[in-house]
Length: 133
Image 1 (cartoon, rainbow, N blue to C red):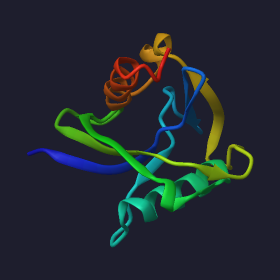
Image 2 (cartoon, rainbow, N blue to C red; image 1 turned 90 degrees about the vertical axis):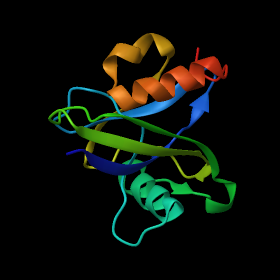
Image 3 (cartoon, rainbow, N blue to C red; image 1 turned 135 degrees about the vertical axis):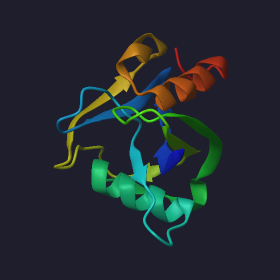
Image 4 (tube, rainbow, N blue to C red; image 1 turned 90 degrees about the horizontal axis):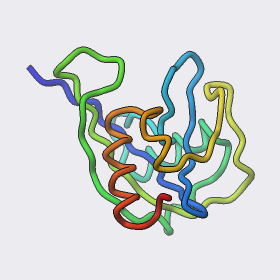
């Protein structure tokens, strides 16, 4: 039986780097975002998760779909997949890690081995599109 973890992620790139986070107690970096709560739309999840993780406000009207990516979930048994629905979006505020985030970093394609399997697929996509150095 396959289990799918439904997540929404914010893809924010600058100067060939992508914003990434490391949650407290985790050994890998993840793109900011998280699990959808019952009844939430993609944009509801995106706005809530980014506010919770990075203390900034996503501008919902600026959100643009980037793609949906699926891979084995990092740190979970075989057969547990994560489906990541990704958006780019403008934001207001100053990026700061919340209490659940230990570190906020800017990563390049060379950091691919430091991230989760689904994020590797996204990094490949960004690199091919010329957005990730």
